[in-house]
Amino acid sequence: MIAVAELLRDNAFINGYWVNARSGSRFAVLNPADGREIATVPDLDDSDTQDAIDAAEGALREWKERLAGERANLLKRWHELILEHADDLAMLMTLEQGKPLAESKAEISYAASFVEWFAEEARRAYGDVIPSHAADKRIMALRQPIGVVAAITPWNFPSAMITRKVAPALAVGCTVIVKPSELTPLSALALARLAEDAGFPSGVLNVITTSRPDVVGKTLMASSVVRKLSFTGSTAVGKILLKGCADTVKRVSLELGGNAPFIVFSDADLDAAIEGAVASKYRNAGQTCVCANRIFVHRDVAEEFIVRLTGRTQALKVGPGVDDQIEIGPLINNAAIDKVERLIGGAVKAGAQIRTGGKRHDLGGTFFTPTLLSDVTDDMDITNEEIFGPVSAVSVFSTESEVIDRANNTPYGLAAYVYTCDNARIWRITEALEYGIVGVNTGVTSTAVAPFGGVKESGLGREGSRMGIEEYLETKYVCIGGV
Image 1: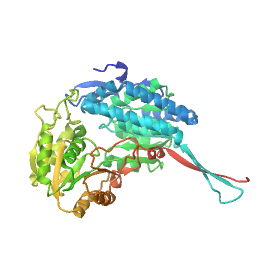
Image 2: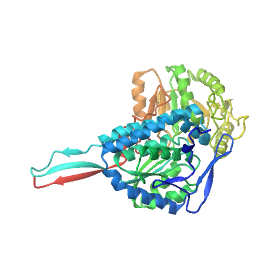
Image 3: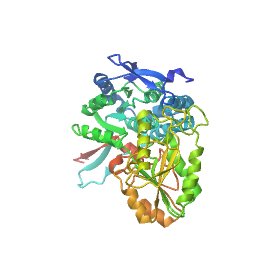
Image 4: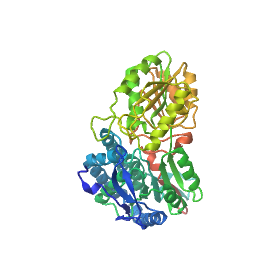
């Protein structure tokens, strides 16, 4: 089904070579829509990981000494190749991840946008000349690449989460080791193949595949050569990585879990709010960290909102993502569908009402019927855990102060959404919400030009925008005397 067979790579990419594991071990990559094997890839261990570290270290000096414009031109060529092969990359992503083909195509465009953005930012990693404290001294602040970077990426956005980390690192002169999810390594390998075609020197970008992320992660964390680790994934794993990087005092960026409130006030444009809820909640079958996890609706419009959102939810088409008409693909694996069933069952037992869905889809496998629950309360597990499935959990509120307190009553702080036509309220509530991202009258906020990241237990640092490049730079103070 892949028109360009060269994009379907089945070996890891280290130091410019396509390699198997030293042990010869391999593991299967499965299509979540039908459980069939797509390919096998190498099951790398600590010794293979050290090879990748050595390769990145060996390439670092030459890469960081290149002119910013030279690095930018290589990134631009990579960007062009990604767009040229967008349809094939999207099909590969749908096969291994399950999301509808239209969403995969959108993700490839989104992934490419980070490469383009940071290719341009490569020329703007400015330092400073600082007014001196003494007549015979001059002061400068230089901005230099941090060094070898490890990027650990998730399965739910298997291309965009790579480029969002790799592009800024490469732009400023870092070399990178990517460890993609064991569930979706093929998208990462395809991007490496295009980087190879773009002309990146050997060792600048390495992709290691493994079914033992704990083994590989320990090696990356323990290495004094790796000076920066960037991770997107669960808060639980992020905490482990943060602790593990402490011994070598690495710079760490973490984009972790969320528990996004979606707040609809009585003066909101309900048409826009419903479409925003569908876009936020059901994209990627609800398997995103910025999904609307808790939908709060003012009691004056709650029943109308619920009835209308129920109708939209029932109309969503479920099936294998390769069908252009499909809007909801499968969940990633059986553990994901088990979690969704547990959260719904617990909520119903505690008094929530199923307005639609609430069960596995007739297609079987890991397909789940798009669901809407009403009468959800704050003490239910479904309001305190990331659902990561196509389930809308709706509860009612009465006052602005009440909903702010409820929305903030979580250890997470990644994304929040607010629908209202009151300009004064927009200022009040966006300032009061304890979240790194707030969408006002929109359910989709992600873009390469804006800083993405959370507060509290949702992470550290920002990705995208001019701020995203800061994560890969060190500041060196230079004081010149005897002037």
